[in-house]
Length: 151
Ligand SMILES: [Zn+2]
Image (cartoon, rainbow, N blue to C red; front, side):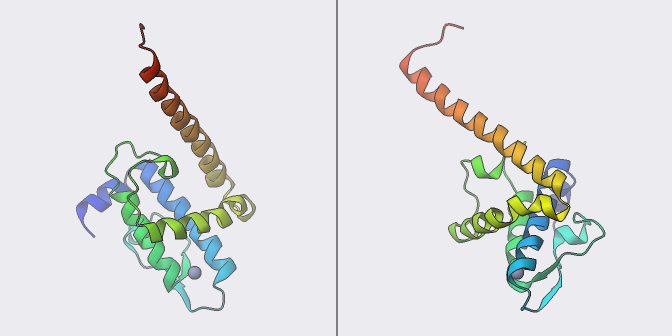
């Protein structure tokens, strides 16, 4: 693990998003991959204790996706880190983005039922705020190209 990873993981926002991603991945893997060999996750974030005392037991595939996500969150070039869904950087590969969208679509609505209510609700609220901000920015862009502002 390099120092930058550890440093960024100490940021509460990055840490909380990583934990949420881990929780969601666990819900997804529990539902879809029970027939696979599943082991406690070994990753940099797990080593740092980001996921808490409870071990994340995942199949190799989900563990791989989560490790990829950990790195994307930790090495996000933007500070503060924006809400990933509404970020224009697209730092995920197309394949990983597709997997995560599918996983989130399954686990997001179910997270509240699995005792992750706070993370799930926070996720929804932050998502809504980010979408509004995104829409406002789009509106502002088109408005400023139509008429000048005289603040
Ligand atoms: Zn899995």
